[in-house]
Amino acid sequence: MSPTEELVKQWESEQAQLRKQVVEVDTEHWQKCTDFCGLERVAGLDLSFIKGDEINACSQLVVLRYPDLEVLYEDSQMVTLTAPYVAGFLAFRESPFLLESLQRLERNEPTLLPQVLFVDGNGLFHYREFGLACHVGVLSGLPCVGVAKNLLQVQGVYKNEEHQSQISALQKEGDSFPLIATSGKVLGKALRTSDKSTKPVYVSVGHKISLDTAVKLTHSCSRFRVPEPIRQADIRSREYLRAHFPVTETGSTE
View 1 (cartoon, rainbow, N blue to C red):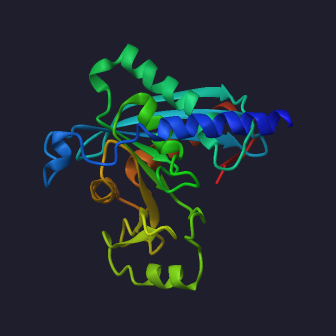
View 2 (cartoon, rainbow, N blue to C red; view 1 turned 180 degrees about the horizontal axis):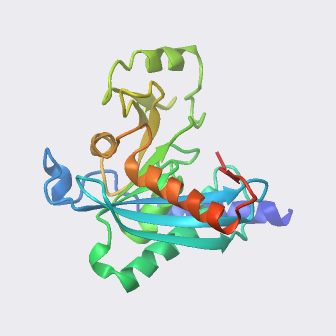
């Protein structure tokens, strides 16, 4: 067995154990209010890479005030990824640095600790129903929502004609349709977040939130196609990279 195969076996075991801890229902009082009363701080987490460099990245955390979505706090940190990229195991490569940014916030500005996290990636909508958003949610203990810009073709969900016709049927912002596995389980939803964009995002539960609440909150936090916490994290991480590596274009892992 190669080192990578051994590592994958180990990661599969860890995912299976952590998966048991995922909470797929609303746990916070603010989640049960129609207008999310009591929700004051939402956060976005993202990693941006220098184009052509899959090792060095900017780990980004932003905390926004809710509901006006003004930035209260940002943390940009250059990091060196040590774990290999293996499809379906992105969390083992990226989550340590995202969790470190939350730990720095808790040490330096504990009053700004977010009440919910948005992660640029999937949650339960994953090969083994344990994507990056689940990993970060369980290990941080915070409610977490996964929002992906691209469709992960997994568990019988495909980017086919049926999927495209469902997207075409999303007439206005807030419209959505379920992403249903071959087992019949709803793993997430495709959501049209803005009238300015016909392309949906893919929302799934990370931890301590129901899918319906995650979808409603994602829409509530969106001014454009990508919800503002993730959009601001992406913008600021790319700005940081451009400032420190001005001759290099920035790229994305997606």
